Image 1 (cartoon, helix red, strand yellow):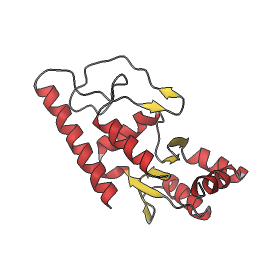
Image 2 (cartoon, helix red, strand yellow):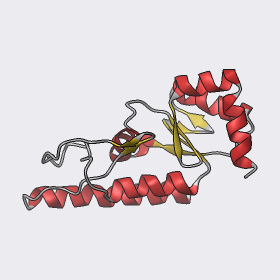
Image 3 (cartoon, one colour):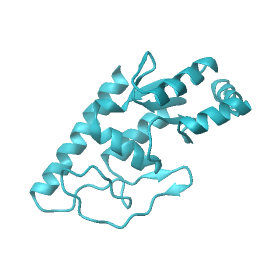
Image 4 (cartoon, one colour):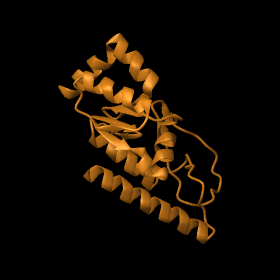
Length: 164
């Protein structure tokens, strides 16, 4: 609950910063977004305050907030809903897989904040939700979770991380 409140507060601050930057006709705060293979390079383009796309050349509050959450939780799932009440079939599938692996995991409901919802997609350079992170690394979405679960790789990774 505290983590969710923190993320919402940081997202609100990021949105205010973007709106202020737009109001004063300066470039808004850009966020450096990374994928599991490195930085996502996008050309710097001025964004309207209604646009939720992030710039790839600089770090900013949304990137920092997401990175903090990812690094502070060994296993975290950015999803629609939460682990007790998933609000989409793919999020439910990932939740059930993690529960069947006896994973001690946290969830972040991206439906609570549109800036977060778009920010996590840009952070990982992955276009869909849910997104699973284990030990600070982006694992993937629902299809990858299913494949890794069926091969036994996900259970091994979870056990390794939880026992470290």
